[in-house]
Image (cartoon, rainbow, N blue to C red; front, side):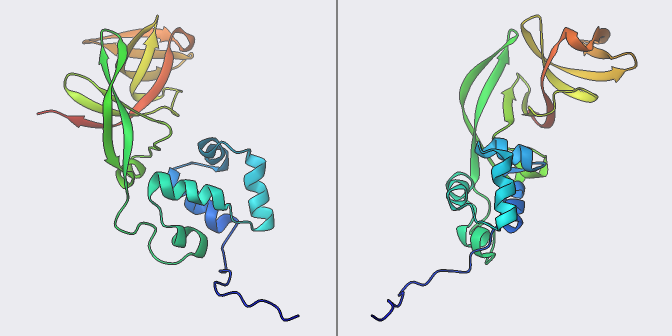
Length: 198
């Protein structure tokens, strides 16, 4: 019997790190552990892709549908990553009022801007105050220096924090600084980008 001739032959699919490095870039994942969290797969699965040079086709499809990234670029390494510029990403906008967050609506921002500020759609929080729209990285929960969304005694607020010796934090409250212990508050995330109303 003659062998069937494929009218649509298989492509030379790329796999392993060729794909996962691009997935890290698209999702703004710092390492393969955070990439595993984004897609809900064990880190060992990603290691298997590397060892066997496998292409995670289902993950590629998910990435295309979520972020608008080109399948051809991901699996064949051909053409641009985005066909017509990065796709806008939908994020939940929450309003901070009276010490609590209230979901308001969806807001949109392009993936490229998120990436430039080290944000991932999976871990970004958008908070609207009376004067600013704040983009918060919820992976940054160990305060060093900057503005953070914090929970103190069940009340949420955005404050400037500076770490000082002795596992203590100096928190700026309306013109004055208050020193607290590390464990006295919960840090939800760090403000990495702000849109200010003029």
